[in-house]
Image 1 (cartoon, rainbow, N blue to C red):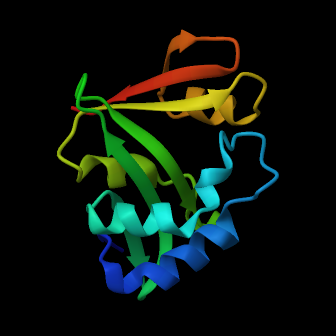
Image 2 (tube, rainbow, N blue to C red):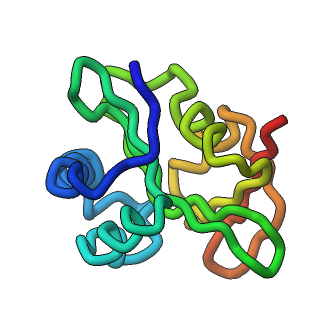
Length: 138
């Protein structure tokens, strides 16, 4: 497998990957903008998207945004092909960003909260809609 920052020439392939692996009805989705190809294109241009290839096929991707106010990186969206899950691929992708502290939002009643607990994301804050979870990489 090869992990790299995604390049603009993979735009169509990445859009197709997210369309296949992000379920529009998943309760963990915090906004419809996850499905906007313009946001994905902007992330590609800013080098804020990482992909993993296996045999020249995308098997995982993460889109992220470093926040200027506190140097924490918001994990905006990610997807992993079901055949590659359970291999800590999200952490592997985040590790090449050069950042150490990450945050993700998850709706309070989402089953996805169990995934974050299981994969070492620490609950840092709760508001009326979301669990905020943090991850520190060494």
